[in-house]
Length: 232
Image 1 (cartoon, rainbow, N blue to C red):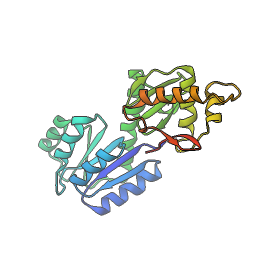
Image 2 (cartoon, rainbow, N blue to C red):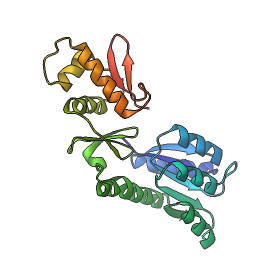
Image 3 (cartoon, helix red, strand yellow):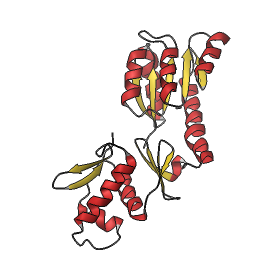
Image 4 (cartoon, rainbow, N blue to C red):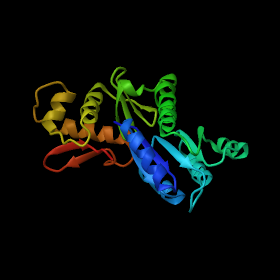
């Protein structure tokens, strides 16, 4: 799964250029033209990194940064038109991770984004005991470390039985795909399907409870067909 970058800047040309370069680098890109829209997107989407302009209508970058830091520790790179220490100091005090001064080379933006993603999600996660991105499967805020056979949600481990692990691996290898009860049973129990619907239902129920308080937040029942892992 590609990492998602939110670009929040009121200059359409800057957003378009950044989108082009970041998408070419393999990122999924979301755009916001003002601070209010940026907050709305951040609330409704899984965002891995934010490129945040300081001077925006509605709410400025500092206000948006405060809102992000109240609920998340994702990397935030501030974009400013002024190379002045007071602006940088304020942003850093509020929790910004890096700065870029306009005009900047879009290749610099890609390089800084790559650096932040590598440090925060790969090196940082590995140091904290969570899986490196290259060693696992990702879907939304879930990461399955296929080497250590561990599941993480937002970096926090979720304990799984061996059957639950095999089922989650099946789901996360094919997010959005519907699997029949027979496919789930033969994968999870590594045995020939013997119409053990109750075992499957109990296992899926336990998995749902471990993933979220909302039973259908991740694993959705497709009536008459089976189950699927929701992609978003």
